[in-house]
Image 1 (tube, rainbow, N blue to C red):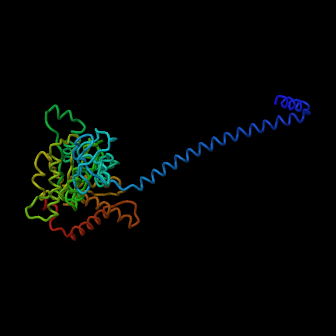
Image 2: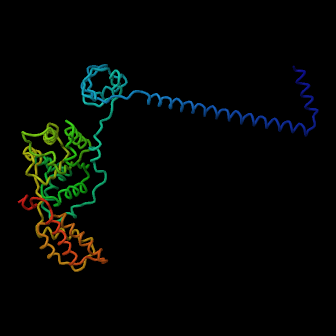
Length: 406
């Protein structure tokens, strides 16, 4: 072997210098190519490992999708670290086994859990879910309405701010005096007089979470659904505290309870009883305030009106002469007007609500646009009043707002 190496070295030494340089260059090229191939092989091996992991994840997802669906239930009691009592979605109660991987601190009565379809054993703990109608009631953006947009209701605005804003902004004042802050206010009055507008201004002014719900949305078809939504509504408000709940048209669920009633009426009454329990139950509302509004205070249940639930009942009346003038000024300040005599308009709009006054201003603007003018004149305002008067006379209501609230 040593002799052959010596012969090779001798043969190389005998090669011309040019051929020797060519061989050295070829050797360097081969080494570089070999290194590139090794690098490429390592990269391919890394890619193969990544693809195998991806395949494993996809196979796991496929297996999960092939699994039977889990049943949603509620935990009623934990017997020990291995057994518990659960209520399934159809209302049946079972004693089941617990997944040992679950955190014992999360296993509390009332917790939503996922159950195996065959053994009904607790697989995992679910977060508390809100009804979409309840969670969607939370206002994300603030309304643009401010107290400056509300005219003719200075006393009413002051009463609402004392009962709703002050306890949230300066709770120490109530602690010094030694009284419990009001829980909420009930706004009563004819349609279009500013009840909802006042609630929007409160939402704009405060930093609290504002949750708006219409009473008819709480009147559900199936037994127990309305009460559950009321319970979730107040639970959401407590979690998001400080918060304000605005219940518009509360007479939809707050009507007086009667002996002779249909099954639908009884379900509405159950919803009302849940609302009464939430307003003045064992669980304190603390930083949760309630604003309710209705056009029909005469049909509300007495239990709903007693002190301790709605501590203040604030009437939003049909605006008087001075209030009507202030309302017209608010709506006309952003309009292009020319030589208006508001006093004449005020005299012609006796008995008008705030919404009707706004409609009068809009109708006057439409008249000017129809005639190709850029400003509103006195004749436009009087023509708008005449149009509104015609609509009012054609109204099919059996009683006017003044007669109902006199």
